[in-house]
Image 1 (cartoon, rainbow, N blue to C red):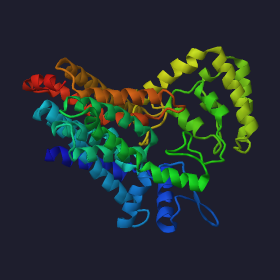
Image 2 (image 1 turned 45 degrees about the vertical axis):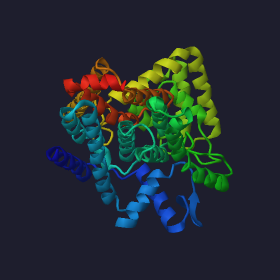
Image 3 (image 1 turned 120 degrees about the horizontal axis):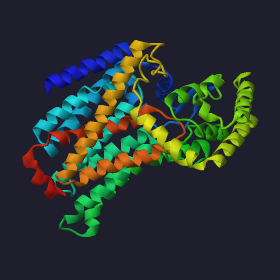
Image 4 (image 1 turned 90 degrees about the horizontal axis):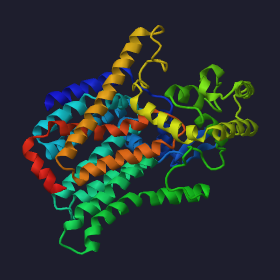
Length: 453
């Protein structure tokens, strides 16, 4: 165990020293945290009169930064990354101990090595973002769920642990409500054989729901007082009240987008940087007329990178034409393709590897590295699915169904997104590593697993 944790720490430290990423959303979160600390305003430093309030990010990660900045000083991002390194190793320990309880000590050791040496999750400790803490909450929630069952599936301290994990997960990212949707019904199912009334059996699950919802009350009240809007989470398009949402451009983008390269070169550039027509793939045009109209719109936009309402409407018209021409492509084929890209693309987005990693002649060494990363990523998914299949052969437990429900619900949510980003599937890895532990199941545990089901 010590060897796995030591090598895991070295791996994460190597990412911190050589691939730290302090930009974009990191600085956004940092700005919110510092304004919250120094001025009592949850917002950005964008005005001469002081910080401007915002609601585009939930307070979970700024809260974490406030604690770190209070302990280590403002902008102490290196220390933040070290803390995240330790948290990620604890995540590996939680998954490993859960696998040990489910499948035996051999599985616990194997999953610890797989979790501690996973470069994809390790890489994100070098970016002060929500991912590391989200992975920890996922691992803690499922670990606490199993410990709660083992302790009798009634009132015990693990109820608070489940509630805390789910509540903080939701404060980090709004879609983490899917984690609660996977776990709360499982609690009701686990408690069904308790010798008590139905209402008493439901009380632990109700308490967890209360834990999840209560922290959202002050956030919702603050948003109402500040903006006069009912917003218990965060807006889908990360816009403050009064800001325009470029729905026409987004629908047009969604009518052809698949890969992460398009997200970075086109989607993120809207209303901020130029968009080159050469970065738009051929599948974005049904005919030459659409190409010419798109090129003309982008040329107009590129004159001053000003995303006007007229431009947005024009892109919306293009989108409507493409959707009407092939609705199956828009509503089925492209969402599935985006999900597959998020799952299978080499997870090199945090490294100095080109977006077009497959162009061997341009950078053969980096392309080879990206291919290795892609195969390693695929291996984790194959091991996880194979382990889940073996778990099924020996009799699934409610916990197995709960982890599967979380993955399925998250996939369903990802099918609705405009932009493909590999980090959105990073949350699968605690579950994949746990499932992979099923490959190392000790035979004597088979009957016990059947009894749990």
